[in-house]
Image 1 (tube, rainbow, N blue to C red):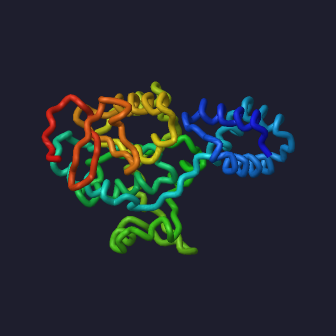
Image 2 (tube, rainbow, N blue to C red):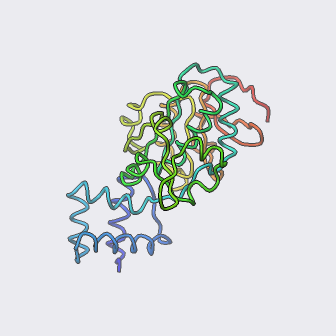
Image 3 (tube, rainbow, N blue to C red):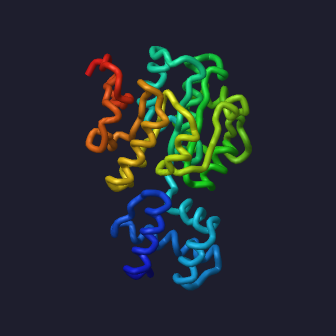
Length: 272
């Protein structure tokens, strides 16, 4: 379906707007998303479709949503949440504890963080969580806070009862007391002004995003994460990610067998 010229054009559009690199191995995936989007728009010409992408921000946003969909669920990579719980009880950043989740997708990660902090701090006023994603459709679902059986399958039953309202059709809605502690924003990690406008955070979760960037975009993303992290704050990355080869702005720290990254500048106190 996509000629090399059109595929390169679409890859350039994706890169310019997200920083994500799509190589030839992703061509079939992109073709499927383009075909689906063109049918929704009732557009039959690739030339017309690309023109719409370039001239209509809403069409471009919908396309970005289609190619950045990430499957997620509550308590994914629980070991990171366990480390967060320990740090919150041992570090002295003051209150409220501020956490950034980026990309937050449909909200499972920031709400999981909210559950952990609610249990550890025993007072929801002591923490604030910000979720950021480039996908506006995912953010609509996150703000709604309604999830199916698979999304909540890893949650302990007591937390499901405590923090969710059961709906018809095997669905659960996050209770308002928890939803009020999480704010969601549409934005791009590579947009420095946007990132700085979010403020400063004690803990930053940015998992499974850097692996999709080339070196230039990766360095920019890490610099922007550095800007929004307080001195001595912590960065959580996916298990296949690292900042060690791209930047010296964060130093690795091993806590309970898990590697996290602390904003450089303080003496290393944690044991390897």
